[in-house]
Image (cartoon, each protein chain N blue to C red):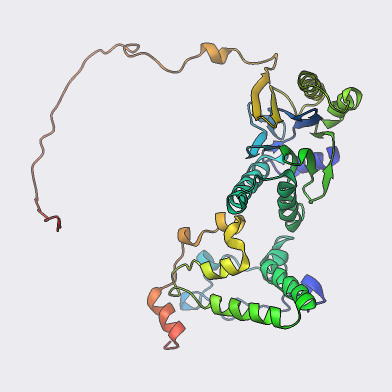
Length: 141
Length: 254
């Protein structure tokens, strides 16, 4: 278990943008990745950023740990096996997946949160290049 | 609260509901009251804003703080409670709403600026809860919240007795909100009252109109009858359309 808390998830280093820029022709792509700022990459830009990024993970850890203490090691192991199986049910890489089995296992199919209203993948403006994403997933790229 | 609100004002100019809401537990139900002003720093953003939100048929909630936060949070809460009551076949209880709210607000560590007062009648009785943005909960017989809460709380402390009758409770809430409206710039305009009893809900909006209401709105009409503007000349030119291309596609009616 991570006892150092959220501070340990702050990054220690970032790749310097000037040396190997991610844009085309070796130039920093300001349109897609914004202006470079080392501070924005290293430090969180919102007090809740780290807490929210790992919220589901931390909840799961807490629940599994409690379950292990109450029912023994087999309970979280079986549940985690089911989670892993459900997580593999996905659509093609460039399409949004419904994750229905995973939601049902977690119990989040019966509640509505901000993740259901905001950042709807069906309304996302960016889409991955279909051929390249499938080739990358199959290992051909 | 007052200090926090002042600091808030100087930084961001979003719409705040620095309002005044008060609740009273009466003999067989709950009386909720609120004013109807929403401010954006020094400007009144909304003169007739609805601060009493629907959560469930037997639970209503008043929200103070940031307008968008209270609205969205209460909508989410209402949806979750509806799903739950459909799933379990039970009517929602006020404690359920309070617990859901508490979890949600604590998760976001006070960044959601919603001070909510939940009141309702369920199978276990009449309940009144106050939830702070950080997630702390207080169960109270009467409460006032918002920028004008000091004046309102004075009236409530003086006039509250356990097991009030309906009319006396409504008058007490109205007097409390009126006192808050008179002494606070962030509260004003009309007074809304919502009475929740076992028999049903009576949402009276507005219960009392403000004395300084703008009466010109009733006289000003923006719909003009046909013929108000005189027609001087009229000229009709038919457009000549030529068929450029025609394609026929058979419908598959098999």
